[in-house]
Image (cartoon, rainbow over all chains, first blue to last red; front, side, top):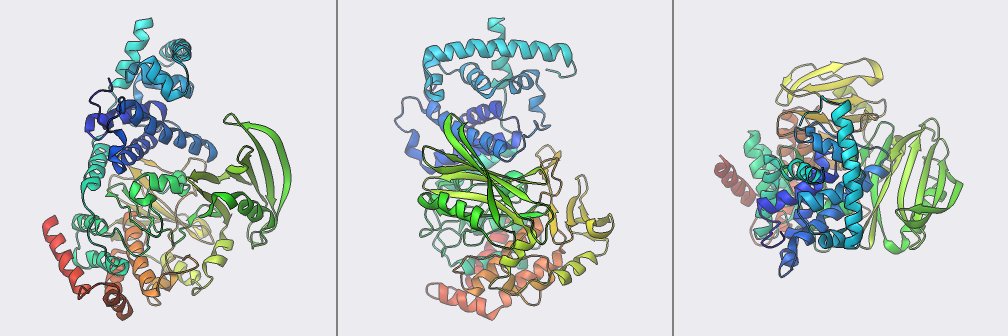
Length: 158
Length: 438
């Protein structure tokens, strides 16, 4: 998955954005985080050269930007509501944003971005086994929330 | 269900794509990163060029393009960073140095090797000038940023909070929470209370969380009338940026120091007397009465930008426009007063700037007066333009003319540039830019 990855291409940037968007419920925050990550990469273009896993490394940069945004929103004393851009209206995304950050992140990394358990573990600072466990818990939480939304909020369309 | 969850996630998240606007921003960043920096230019001269943009390029689109290129040329200037973020909201007000600079590595250089980061898109204009403290104003408070080195950040903050005897009132330690666990790190918190300011009722409390391992503060939250009014700290390598709040009059007290006192009453009276009329920014309308009277700039198909007179200051708010044409107010819903007031060097013009409701704060070692003046002219022109504020377009043009006309500015340009390059150089460059952007 990582091979041939280049964050500077539109496709690579989309991966960064996808990751940021899955964690940050506010579209503007996700955009800013993705841009900040891209600019950090652009500023030192050799940063990804020769790396075995450029995608994981680029996501690692984006991860720091994302968590800075999360911390900022907490310390500013208010939590932004998901904005009304069209993409988050998807049921899956609504369900994801009701999960904890680490559940959101592990599901995104493993299934949306296709990282392996070990790559995900390196990013999140856990062992592959711990990631597998976390994935199971995240899936269970997702199923519960997803079912709940489907049942109680049928107006949220896919 | 196992497969189903994976497929759901894959389809739900895997199909998320950046908007065309974001892709355009990314492409712009890529392009900029490839382009070589243009030759160093005198900051004053470049600002004069900005003023030229408004003088020579009356159409907005042309001006945008010319400004874009001008700021590209504004790298490697004489120690000037300029920060202007029209995404005026709580987050922008608390943007850390790290966040500003993370946007472009060029900015992470030291002040000795100054760079200007610029980005002009329909939704944002960002420049950085750390020499000028740009003050964001909320309903009853002001926010500024200052920096200290890592080693003395804690002592500085503590002295700032405990020992500050400024107009905001003396602060005292009222609570010491020990054995906290913040982000899995041992920490303690100090809560200070600020005595009532002569200008603001009630007290403000500040809670500072300190990481025990480093003994450095990691966050600071302030409360006023039970409401969180912000405060935040961010680490940037060996420096800290600390966003703080002070009562408005306090800020004006310090703002005026070293400069002429702003004639707020006169400026306000002038703004309050603006007639309802159509302007290039939209139709000016008034709403409400008395001290909370709002001046709205109504643009077709968009919510009004507001300029609200708060009794002591004007508070600008604006909307965030999205690529799909929708919009959202950028400030948190419970703090409708969040917004921005624009502060530029007060000394810019006796004739024009005293008539505008803007104040100034400059570094302890200010740049030469003409430079500051030119910067302010350009800054104001930007802000007024992009924030759809209350000042009429003609006045922006006037500022451009003013900046060009000032003899001392021209002198600075002549002295600050190598060889024979002078104002005419910029005039000709801008004409080229203008013609090529058409």
